[in-house]
Length: 279
Image (cartoon, rainbow, N blue to C red; front, side, top):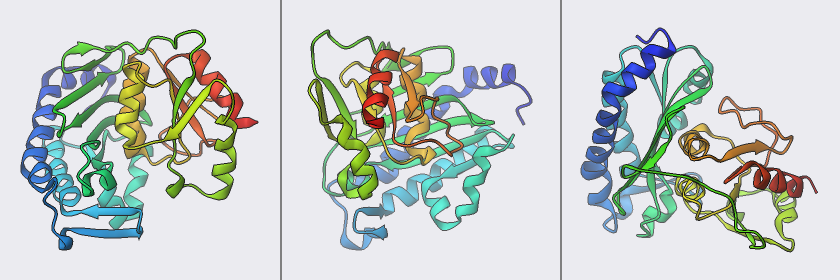
């Protein structure tokens, strides 16, 4: 059982590569064999036709839950599919126990249609603070990692989000219309203005990676489920970016945020996006 921040740092120094190995093994065993080969009985709906789950999601999460729990005795795992089965398990994110936040296939809709734009996300958090994150895109064989205070990396190369080029349009990935209410669509309309180029997002994890790489200026999302955001938000922070809610406060993985919120390459861009979302 981890008792303090120093011990967490020591744990990460010893076992970060073990988490990477677990990600690669989960993808190799449960995800990639089904990519472009899903049978009809391996795909189900959860809340509706745009909320899909596959055997790859379920089996990869089960594998990661077992491995991560063994790596860090006393920790708990909050996975998307486990929370769907038991919503009360989500409350562990707010506790003192170290928690692994897992999205086994982020971008399930892309995965189902044979699009390589999906990834697996893991974050390690405690008391609502994300301490480390892993973003693995198996179809692209890309591994992005971040440890709080130690930077963000993609395949071993340091990431720097940088600042937008003066005079260029701000490229912003927004919540997909299929997943937004009328009120949320109205808030996002503020981004449809001169100097901003909004588009619907794909995998949230890969959009965060694009911000951390300086390939995308910002995101504007309308939901706050931690498995979609925790890993990517730390990646953006450690690359030099920032995140703000509609009220101008940092996003909290524990919830109760003013939505929509943004993650951006730099503070000026985050403030600009928030101003437009308030309009």
